[in-house]
Length: 155
Length: 265
Image 1 (tube, one colour):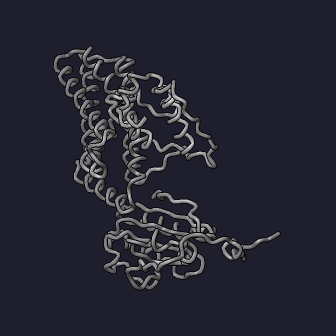
Image 2 (cartoon, rainbow over the protein chains, first blue to last red):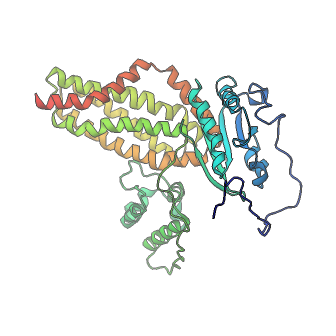
Image 3 (cartoon, chains in turn blue, green):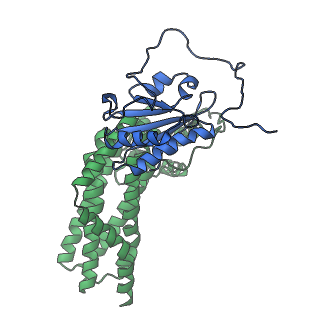
């Protein structure tokens, strides 16, 4: 049976049991606007020497505690390596973060679907062409919001 | 048992040698440690064993110390997942591990150097002197300085494991000092003795750092701290004389051939 692209395959999680404490309200950890990678200026003050989170669009909808566990304390940009156009500009912006804005670290958070790997590849390409070197981490999220891997990326 | 959890491991192994053998079965190599001042509880925590393995280890140690006690054997559930045997380091820690690779190349050649040592010949004494320069500039000023001046600021320097590592550094410096003196006095036996002691010390020291210290520090570092460490290592390296570092790398690349030539002549 042909299942088609794993990134677009229909999957139903409605039967999934939800656990955890739903009481109380959580504050947003977002510290900036805009967030979409085409819209942000890589030299915006909130990126200066920051720990930057480059997240695939779907990640924040998938990980229950995205704000608390991953966004807190970081500056962010979001992108979709499958659907977005002008991805050469993305590589240039990431390179500018590294060389011009002198970010401290870059964490790339992606979904487990194969097309999402393109975002890590963009970060690696930018790192290889940048003059500065920084630690880059890749976090892969399952379709049901579990963290599948978290590791430092080789330049 | 509480009392022994807070006892330096050397005291425990001296009183109960079997404990040293048990620790070795779990790849915890405290027996040859130069200080042995780490507390048992810290050693167990620092090695990050799987939960069932840690329970099993503590049961066996307690049973060895108190054979008369009726200690309930814990139920060992098989781990769902085998712990990952490959150690993955953060980028700054990986850099220190890579530097160890070069240092280990020199350590690996020390037995051949000792076998052929000829302090009377110019090429023989020069080989020893160049080896000492490598130790002083690469292993000590380039590598150990990054640990002492930067990395250990991210730990509690009063912890026994850090004190043990610092004591190793001092012991290594002591051997270098004595070797320089021995070269001046053309004392071949002293050169051989200190080279051997340096090799043994650094072999154990590097194993301790690669397998225990660096993974332990890595587990406690935030992403921000990893970035800071990486940047501080870069700054420290930029301040160093690149020519000296390249000379050290060249020395290792050529050492094998020099030893081989020396052996043939």
